[in-house]
Length: 378
Image (cartoon, rainbow, N blue to C red; front, top):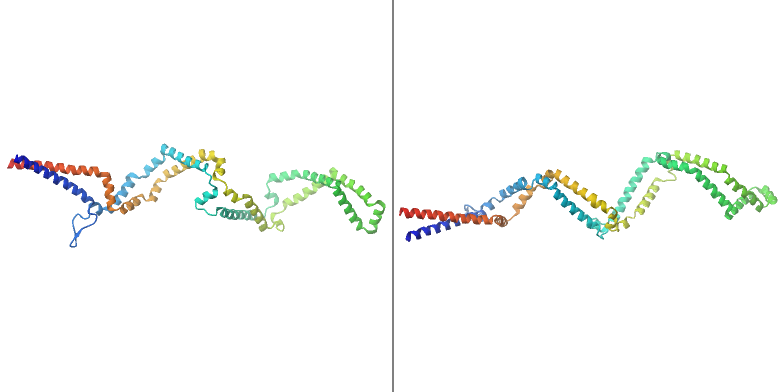
């Protein structure tokens, strides 16, 4: 009985020593957090292994992440995975649909993007852009003739329209002189003409009378304007003047068309017609509604396709620019020792317990073996 008690005690003592030793060894991985000094000398095994090797651990963790976890090859596989692409398409389509359901105006959207006074800025930019383009157009084309500047199709249409213009002028002339206003105007012209002829004018007036003279001249003028030859004469005159005009260079009209005034007038007219302020007050949904189907079915998938292709193709460069290894290292170095301990224990707590139990088991077996040996020898 005494021998069994001795062997049992040795088993218990061995188990306690083995379990405590392993538990102490595990604790020494983390504690103490700082070195302990006695009379100016640092005690061995202080600080613990992980606090002592924290910087090295941070470097190794960063290297581990880059070489085995977050790799360019892994990114490429993920970006080219059809399931991932499908999920991204759904996300982009969902976000795009929100644009067609919002009452937010373009101005409000720009404010959210931290773009203030968008209407003023756009008007200034549009004004400057138009000024530059119009001045450039003038400088490039001012030495050209009208014939060179105007499109050939428009020149041809004007040429073909000249007979119609002549006929229109003739008809309008007939309408005018047939009217009471035209008749009165003709009478005034005859009076003015005769008044400048002195005695001859008085004699004509005395023999014919003013009313009789107007009645005789008016039908002849109308007959002249209705005559085909008159239309042909007008056509020839207009064609002749038009041909002269076509051969003139733009800068020959500089007295009439002053560059600065022309550019300013055209610029102001276009900016006014654009009505940028009213445009910015329109809802985003209203502006995009005509192209809703195009955005949802074509543009959104195209953006996703381009994005995943670009990311997959440049994953090496992106990871290099991100400096993932340095990022992980800085993060780990920034952790407190207590947080590192909690992280490791949260992952390996069960395994550490098993190591402690294993130490107790081995200690107990060694105690049993010692007890048996002592019993045999004794």
